[in-house]
Length: 259
Image (cartoon, rainbow, N blue to C red):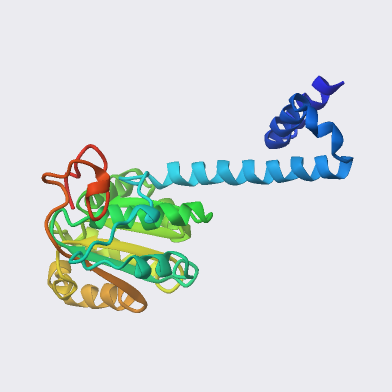
């Protein structure tokens, strides 16, 4: 009978309850609990099971460069231009629901991408969808999508993504088509969905990088409307770091190829 019950739970996609029931059957102390108490434990197990599965699915779909980056691991040593309290306040706030932008600037190796991934990773842990895109490669992907007719569908999917991470903004020049597409992407998100941008270029140089004055005005007006800024300073975290914990912002074993 119990085997039948376990199979029925799995067929109903209640894998958490099935696992919890198997654990209860192997624990002698569970016989002392009432039916209501055991049922409550099974329901709680199912809730946590689904939450964990959703987080794993969101993190995989996000495609973060550093999926292991966590805001809890930030070491905001003096001179980095990064305050732990500011990061935690942002992460725990409503910047995602309010569609704010997070702008992270600094020199190569300052930890911009790591910090951006940590914020996006925490967003996934809170049940939000996220997507990582490297801007220097965005133009090629957009050309492919225009060519195969998938651009419109992809644009709709981007508009529904809670957190879009645009890495290495301003590192390479963009053509007129990419510039126009970027405006469409930003416009769909303005005031509704959150966007994280990392860049070696100071924000005051972004207008010149975009190139077309009219489009640049439109993009920056939307990006800068409601934003939070971090300007990371100090020496590169790549060279000479013996471990991730030794750096102001941890980095993975394989060093970051681009800031």
